[in-house]
Length: 253
Length: 265
Image (cartoon, rainbow over all chains, first blue to last red; front, side, top):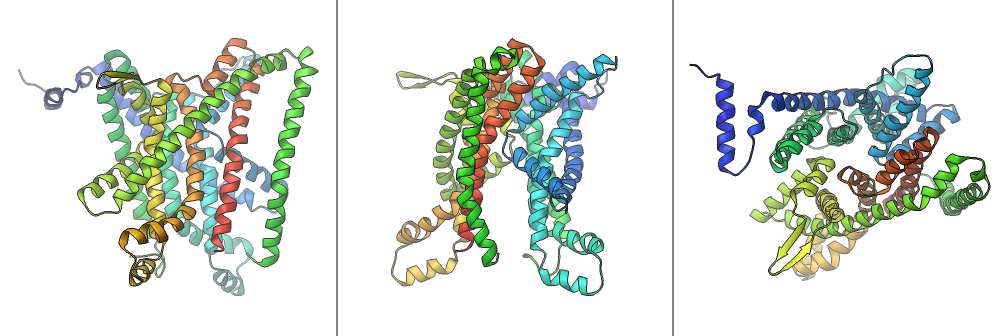
């Protein structure tokens, strides 16, 4: 009788860790391993989607802040201050438990089911939350663009819009990259709060397993390693982009 | 920033504190008015007034945990940060500590301390209880310590290296240079990011509701579940948001003001 090599590897892992006094037997049960791996995938999905959406939100907030309409700028400013100075978890509850409830009630009248799932709310709230931080980082980046460069470009006949998109923003992005990468690492870490509204991410899947098996420490080690790998890859990707876009003569190396 | 601009900043600075107090006074008056007049007509407001003391008591727990966590985290963080400056094995361990706790999600650390730490500690013959709120405090103090260590490292690195050389040419010992010349300057540079960290730790205390601490958010959830009326649910959650904002926003304003002031030195 032949044994599948993956199964053999898993058995070896369980036996080796058992000698250290750790209980990883859940990986041998498909009913527990599958949700755990699915949870890891879900966390990666949340992280990827929020990284993209938060950048979009950041750009929108930034352009609102710099808009010539004072009301628009004021609204953006207020939103940034509110989201920076309140806990993300309460923001998530205000969105999922309050706004979602109101939407469900409003749709109930017309007999339509609420299409917004907890997953969507997590991505939405985290994106808007980190978008505010991105907007601040990009604003600092815009301020760091030397005035002489802008005057030089203006003297070459660039209009306001072209100046912003072709000169100011590309330079600002480079100045803001270290802060943006840092925001992205924070975002990946913050994605763990998805478990609070029962989105099946890695934290939620682990809670389900440890309530059955009482092996909190073992799962904690796995989660921390997983998040460590995830934040490390975000960090490396950020550094790579920084290197690729580096302006000669700025920074070290 | 040019001089005239600086002048307006100074003017708004002087205005902002009275404005803030006036805002608080208006809010208190509105609350008082709501408590005495509107409650008879609105059952939602009546329930909210009834639950306000419980919500505020919950928030006092948030503040207690945040203060305990920042105190413990600062003590630990300064020790770790000091060690991380050295090139020894201990220094390497300290840097690994900073790296690990800066990259771990806070929520996972809180789960870790809440579920892995024992509920009582045995020290010799005495048994000390280790209550849940203290476990959450530990879970917040660990990442806070890593951040304090990083803030400390940044502050030391921001002091020009020539000051060490200049001071040693004046016959100061290494210890004297560190304690009488470098550290006093570091403290001032560390203050704004440290206050920023305190605000972040305070916001992190909201996570304690997930491990069964009856903090503001947990109380809000209980209140919303008990009263079970949509308008009350809306009011309670946004009140929780507002209470945190009222506490954290002034801290961030003061932080920004200090940052600006030190920029001109």
